[in-house]
Image (tube, rainbow, N blue to C red; front, side, top):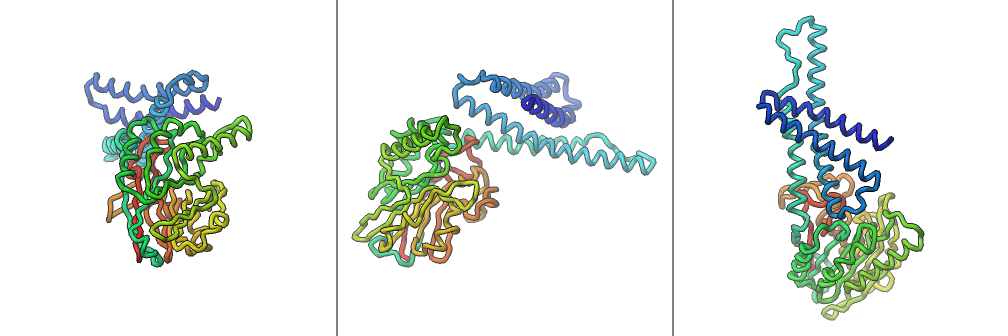
Length: 409
């Protein structure tokens, strides 16, 4: 019954949106009008068929990538239609107001309550904007890796560490990739930066460890002079997957940890590594997922990760969720100069024009959502993510390889 009600709702939505098509096509040659009508109605009919097939488990043998593309196309079409319907609703309010005015005025002279051609065109235009941009973002931007460079000046940075070069990537979400070959380009870009340190700040998979298996050979190619270090993100624990038993879930996490080892990444589980670089100690601290938002888990233990790193003049923290920074790091650990996070993806949607505007709807959820932030003498860098989740693309917020160079401030 729920499925039938959903299909009925979709058909009603399409019927309402059809009013714009019918108004716009009024006066067209019959053949063109018929084509416009057919194009409009073929989508809801196809979606209803798809939903019925899925409910009856008839899509189980369909390739995962095809399923993702089909679901995304339906999503894009209906996001666009919602905008069309919104404009039509405004037009209907106008028409109701005119009818009411005519009734109480006792005369309809001079008032046309027919559907507005202008608003019908406007609704199609408004619906076309997300349709075109989301299609473009899916075709052009999923693997359009962009290097973001920042210089961070730390007051107490030892002279021997001046110019230390760090590359950060985050939120790979390997289970979402539709293609494998373009991902290799990310590794080439990373290695071209010739990093001293490479950091990965969580969400290697969507839920299941086997998602990363086809990409182990690719990500094992990352090279950094003093090592590649990683932490877990909220998706890595398998919390969003239905397991047959707790033991199966725990085995999945162990398999994921083993994938980090296979790739040559040093996975930090509430612990640190003391490195000697140019005669100075550098502490790389890594916590498990810690979020200030109640809907995400707090597996992280910074107190435990900090133990033994007290005397290192440079402390670098890897923590997946940026809310950890203000919730704990800046309050209780003033000597952690720079924290690296990810998690937000920049919502994979927004507007960025360097030096002019940086906006995404995610800014209303996360105070620190992309780029460099400062609080006193402490810094946070939030990576926009290398992969994607849900929508297989990006609009305005491109996949990121971060390059941070440390300088004495």
